[in-house]
Length: 277
Image (tube, rainbow, N blue to C red; front, side, top):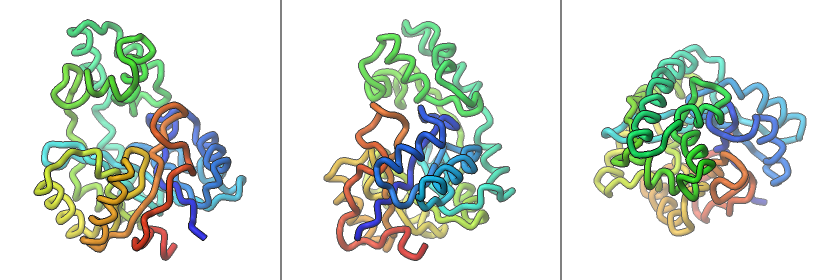
């Protein structure tokens, strides 16, 4: 039987719309066998997620999604089977979270300059943890206020690089993120590689460095990939000898293509990241 693994989900601890226990309940309804909560740069939801998964009979692995600046672009590295109390990981994430609030104020100011007033205050209404305010919270406000049709439309028009509300932030380095994950006993995974828009040369450099630093897996089937990208990144995994991960990247009902547990299986011929767990 194929294991129904969902190893990439978010809660209100970062930029999701549901509490950790509610995401667990949704995953259970989706018949997920192996689940992980991977909030952005934050570990505070891990105990609640683990306890809820246990109560629902799901296997759970602790996780996190770390924001990385690589080649002046933002890349996300998921860490799975981590020790969420490890001081190296905890301290590193505390440092990389710093500056989010100041960045959010600048985003609000830039949006006001192009005719979207009150965006900072509006975004903060969606935030449970002020240290984790993100562009996603702004996107929800802009949709609510009628400034855009969807969260994807918000990024295209306002928040993506080169758009009027974009404010860069210096995250962790790739080396830092992988060192923190490995120190905490975890496995490092390149999240949703199809989202980054790198050239083939840039992707080659990213995957080469990732592998040199001990990276062993990439997400192949994920909520932001198209079916064609499942095949594309299956080939990448085979070429580099990476294991393959699978996760919905769930943030909230009505956002994204997939709820937990609803993704198709990994393509044939790949070694799942959970093979030896």
